[in-house]
Image (cartoon, rainbow, N blue to C red; front, side, top):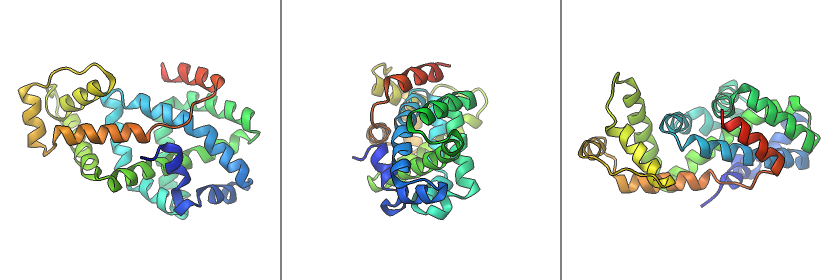
Length: 233
């Protein structure tokens, strides 16, 4: 199973680093350094989002976004406003505008790449990453899980005063089992899962696969301190 760093490196048929370097007028070594510096922060932020049902719902929206999937496969699409906007939206969701600014300033200081370049590069990398995770999930046989979870979560959000059962309850219980605080599924939750065509065992396996893909290298101590502040908000 690939982790997030592997997935980003494999974008554009393995030419992601060269394409990023050309786009921003930096060397391939600088592009690689920038991506390697950004990936642990993105990884930790994504993992934090998946521990909360509402955050997970938004992550699922991104994984089902064709702009991200195009950005992963096509270097031209990666530079399209749709991809950069989607990538920026993801980063803002995870870190907030001020938090992302802190991360960029820190990475600029450690890599020697200007904050302006890193600010423009980060949404493209984020978009490629989400597209790559979606493609990897599909290749691993979990594409149906992503699609049904995304549709089910959206439907749950549209229901005013929705109960804790159905997709929402199932997501909560899957997250609980992943992070060690699962509650027993109620009959309503089981029925909701069956009605949505979601096999709880397949969903569990899909969530485990997703969590594995969101892993990456360890952030430096200084970056870890920044992430601790940013993600606690």
